[in-house]
Length: 278
Image 1 (tube, rainbow, N blue to C red):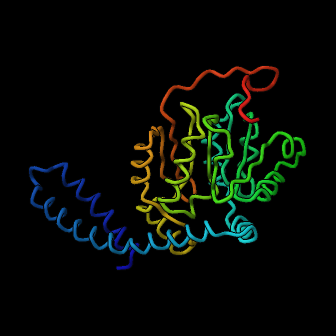
Image 2 (image 1 turned 30 degrees about the vertical axis):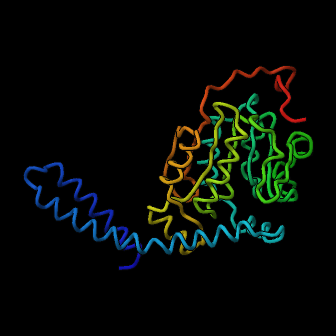
Image 3 (image 1 turned 45 degrees about the horizontal axis):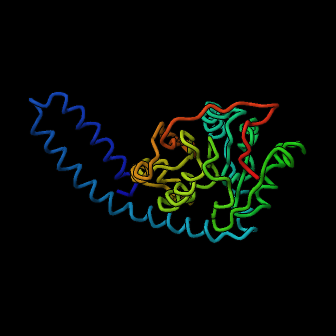
């Protein structure tokens, strides 16, 4: 059996075992046999899964080393389909508001900007400022592109120049499908410092325990992650997991909040009551 057949066989065995456990008194011996067989296949799958982790690590190194040109090529080759855009923009619609300072990290080709531009103030940031400038072209509106959006360059992913403890939402959809767990955790540490209490950290990912994601890793060079490990690590930082859902292809997501309650923010004359960026 290849890697995907083993994983599918393992999933089927677990489903069958669960069914038998419903009648555990009668089928206890059979359930034990299932447990033994599942353990053997899990061990084989675990050994095979090293290849997924290795490929994700290679992808992450490529991501970190991108020049401006290679980053532009990466973005052009990894635009989102309509299904993923609809799913993730629908998720964002629950959180975006005109009194919630919002930051999009790594805006890519700008496909999600039209769904977030009502946020005020609205920031975008990338390792290269030219990427931010290119992303805003999707708005086809000079006022929004050049006056409303605040563009930041964050070389080597250093976010110390961004306003600290000032954002109600930070989200990232264009980067983590090419990153490993370590990369996501490192970014999350900085995001924690950017959020005010109760602020949301929202990002998508590809799960390592789904066959469709494993195939994306092998056939499309996407990265897959141990999302349970990421959740545990972010909770240890002080994040609270509010929501997560697994769905293909780039639509799996996590929503975390920074511990504490959100402070009410007034609107004064069309702007936020406080200045968060000088």
